Each structure stands twice: as structure tokens, then as C-alpha cells.
Length: 316
Image (cartoon, rainbow, N blue to C red; front, top):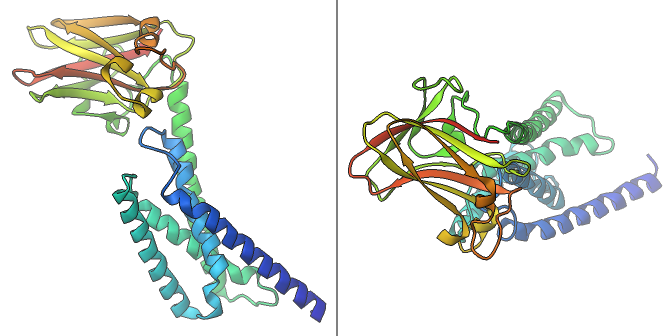
């Protein structure tokens, strides 16, 4: 390798370092401002979180700690520092009202390890040992695994949006990944979908369940049908709530969403609601029917605990 080639490689290396440093300066504020909020969907959050890998990969490349350290000292010192920085970031985020995610600390380390392991591969005239090759392979596998997790979230969300007209797939065995509240899969009263959801209601001021992850685009449909079963011999008043993303990012007041009072009589109950009523429910605006965010079923001030079954939930 001649002097001119060495000089060109050095110049290119310095240019890439400056670009990496510029990237870290641009990305750094995004740890504390912008990005997904508590109303954002799973795909948005998962893709955004991959930025931790990118940021710490750029930061590691910009600093290039291998200029001062090597061997175990390089890996131990860099890992300890990145771990400490990641913990501080998560504590600061929680203090600013942002949602902390300790998986992000792991992603920070993955981004750093990727550069520590792979930089010798791209260093001219470097003869890689078997250990270095193995480190590079493991680092790449960790990154691919994180990408795969995001891909899995995207696939699941695609499946949820494609299950229309069903708003919930009753064959699922893990309802609490999509719902909040005290509910479990049940074989009781399961003639419609092969399985129902048993909902346990308490005497709290508000007691019920909320479907937080559901198909968001309700355009092209006219009705919402909710099928419930009341195993008791007395009526049970319920409230059905539907809201869009704009409601949650706004004032979140009662008049800015759809609320319907349902009287659940003993036995099987099928409630049919016009989507036009849902669309026009918010005061001073129309609901965004292609970005529905949440559906809830709840009671108020029950004198005693009750149990009901959700048999079907779909658009027509």
C-alpha cells in the first residue's frame, strides 16, 4: 500500500468520523423530545427504539475508543460507560414524563458492540483472528435479532389490521397483550368464535376492560356489533366507549368520544351501534374513523362483583 493510498484512507476515515459525530449531535435531542407518545402504535414505538442501536453505533465510531484501549480493557471500559450512560438516559426520560424502556439499555450496548466488533473488519491491512471474526458475527446476529423483533411487531400489527370485520381474534390465548382489565379466555358461551372472554367486574368506581390494540380503520363499515352474555338473573348497566387518537392527544374529555349506555339483560345480548353515531359523537368535530385507538366496556359503582362474557366484537 503506497503513501497516497494510506493518506486517502486516513482522510476518508476522518471524514466518516466527523459524519458520525454530526449524526450523534442530530439524534441526541430525540432521546428527550419528539418520537412516539403513549398513544402511538406498537410498530411506531418499535421502529423508533431501533434508533438506540444507530445512535450508539455512531457515537462509538465517532469516539473510536480503540485508539486508547485494546483487548479486554476496551470491551470492559466501553461497555461499562455505555451501560452507565444508558441508565442515566432512562432515569432522565422517566423524570420528564416519557416512558422508560429498560430494553433500550440493551439496544445501546448492541450498537456499541457492533462497532467494537466490526471495526477491525474494515481496517486496512488488518489480519483478523478467529476470535475477532466470532465477535463480529455475534454482534451482527444481535442486531439482526433486534431487527427481527421489530419485524415481528410489524407482522402482528398487520395481522390485527387484516382481521376485519373482527375487532378481536377470540382464538388468541394471550388477550392481555391487547386488552387491559381482568379478563381471561373461556370455553363458556363460545358458540360464535369457539372461545369467549370472561370479564370479572369489581366494585371499584370504574371497572371493566379496554381493547388497546385493535384494527384502526373502520371506514367502509356501517355498524359495530357487540355480543355479550350475562350469566346472572339481574340486569347489568354497562358503558361502551370508543375514541380515536385525536381524543387522547387532546383534552380527553367525555364529550370528545363516543359513549353508549347498554343494559345487559340476563342471557345473550347483541348490541348493534351505527358507526355514523360514533363518527359524530365528539363535540365540535367528527371522529377520525381511519385511526380508532381504543374501545372500552365498563361499569360504574357496582354494589357487588359481577362476571360477564364477551362473545363477539365486529364491524358490519
